[in-house]
Structure formats: structure tokens, C-alpha cells
Image (cartoon, rainbow, N blue to C red; front, side, top):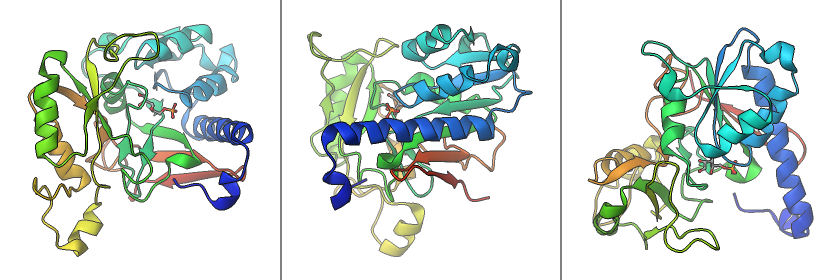
Length: 287
Ligand SMILES: O=C[C@H](O)[C@H](O)[C@H](O)COP(=O)(O)O
């Protein structure tokens, strides 16, 4: 989300504190509203906002969490769960026919229909597995993530987890689809070569023109999914990206509305945004 003049005038250090406080507010409210004491299986996502989710859960005390088991979406959340003294279990051990009661996770951008961009921190594949294994998925974020359309504020591109040997082929396909300068994400300082995910894959960041919502496309008359003009609806683009050979998973969480299905939805039932004024804005999927 673009900063207002007053926000952009705030010194960087103050702005960073405001963002952290906003993440914390969203996380505590989401846990209060969605972690029922009867729950036993809880998914914990990745990123800096989820740190506060774990903090909020741990603050409930051992008596409240004694019967709960926590399922991570990668190495970072595994560490968070263990450091908080919560019981860890892996999604690979969730037996067939069972579901998580709830999963909490962050997002890089959230649009008006609760479609998400995720994977800014190179986690997305395990996140999608955990989110869709939950009866309800709840998103936690700060005010910067609110956006009318995906690609409006998150300009780095859609994170795509790819098999390394297929990366050049995938880049070719993305360019043909109208992505502007897609690239393999480099490693962090000190790491030569590409960033490697928890699953041994690479990440490609693929910028596209801001993605239309279904209601926009109805009005626009633009042919969606047209590889010549690079204009896509969220669903058309996601459906196409996931079919590229070598793509393991995409950082678009889209499709079925989280409130309309008991589980299997990639979209959250609710997204919590800590706002700069100290309030929490909650967006829920239309019933
Ligand atoms: O790859 C990282 C995950 O998808 C995160 O959930 C996402 O990037 C949001 O992270 P943060 O809460 O740090 O903004």
C-alpha cells in the first residue's frame, strides 16, 4: 500500500516500529478470535508476523495449550514452535482423513477478494499444504499488505517455487506470458548463487501487471489470459502458472472462498491487518 504523505514523513526507525506494532496487534487479535480452547491441531506459517502469533499463543500459558499440537510450514516456524515450548508435529504425520483446526499465516499482499501473494520470504509450498489442510485459514498482516489488486503494492513479482534444472525454461514461459523481467531470486548476502528453499527448490519472482479481480474483468471487456497483452485475472494467471513444467508451487493463494468450504481453500476465512492508528481491520470472505 502506498504510504500517505504523513506516513512517509515518519522517520524510518519510527516507521519500522509502527509496522512491528501493527503486526503484533493483528496477530494477537487473530489468535483471540480464532484459537478456540477446544482445538488440538494448529498450523503455524512463516514470516515476521507469525512470530507474534506464536508469542500470542504462548502467552495463553501451558494450561491452555497442553492439548494442542503445532504444525510448521518450514524451518523458521519449526524453530518458533520449539522455542516457545509448544508441541511440534509435522504435516507429514497428519493421518489421512484428519484436518488441522486452524492455520495462521502471513502474506505479502492481500486483495479485496482475499487472494494472497505469499513467498516473499521464500516459503510458500509447505504453507499452501498446511493452509489447505486446515478447516480454517487465518491471515495476519500489517497495513502495508492491504491492496485493491495483487501486484499494486507488492512490485517484486509473484514468487514461484521451481525445480532448479527447469528455471531457465520457466523464465522463458513467464516472459511469453507477459511477465516483466522475471528473475531467479539471488541468495542472501554471503550465499553465492540462488536462494534455496526448505524443499531444495529455487524461487523465481515474476512481476505481472496488477491482477484483475473477477468483478473488474466483467467490466473491462479485456480478454483475460491473453499472452500478448499480459493482462490476467488472478484465477486465470494462477491456473496457467501452476501448469508450467518445472513449477512446484506458486505464491498465489486463490480460488475457492475460505468461508464456503470446510477445508481445502487456499484463501483465508479472514485477514487481520494491524493499522497505523492502533486499530485492527478485519476482512472476511463474503458468505
Ligand atoms: O515466504 C514467506 C511467507 O509467505 C510469509 O508469510 C510472507 O512473506 C509474509 O511475511 P511477513 O509476515 O514477514 O511480511
